[in-house]
Amino acid sequence: MEKNSEPTANKNQKKANLLDHHSIKHILDESVSEIVASRGYAEDVRMSNVRLLLGTVIIAVALVAQFYKKKFPENRDFLIGCIGKYVVLNVVLQLIIFVKEKNAILFTYPPQGSYTSTGLMITSKLPRFADDYTLTIASADPKSISAGKTVDLTKSVTKWFTKDGVLVEGLFWKDVNSLLDQYSGEAKKSK
Image 1: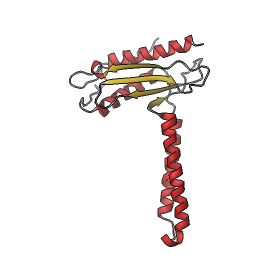
Image 2: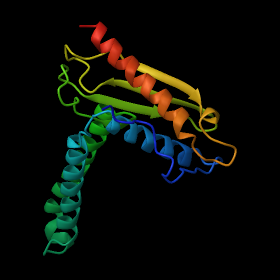
Image 3: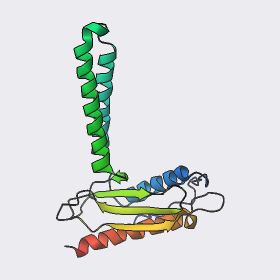
Image 4: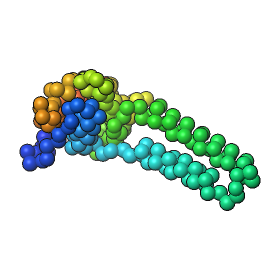
């Protein structure tokens, strides 16, 4: 029996403030995550965990520097070392975000039973003062032999929202599912 990937009618409607592009993007991004999960892709949270761990270490360095037992003139060298570590760790964190994550809203593992060895990296863009939402699906490991060709969808958000700001989930699910099918089709053709 095939799973129904369409949202059910008894779900709460998702409503956005149409004057706030962050609200619109948030609702669309959350819906994309739901759609991808319904297709059998499990979220890969390793990168988020690395960022959280690195952030915790940065906070620990700052706390140690703040509450060190000796007062300022005596702990000058220790403070300089802590400040140096703080700066270096923050630079590493920003590099991870800039180089690896980019605009990613979701990393996934490959679906169970799939022939591919790489998951998806899904990114989205909704520029300020624009209504064109761009959703891109790429391989989480673009250098992998099983990586598919990157596919994207650019469409006006006015196609998916009513004038009251309610997301028309059926239309959005249809567009995202067709983009996922397009990516899957490209991945199979490249083999």
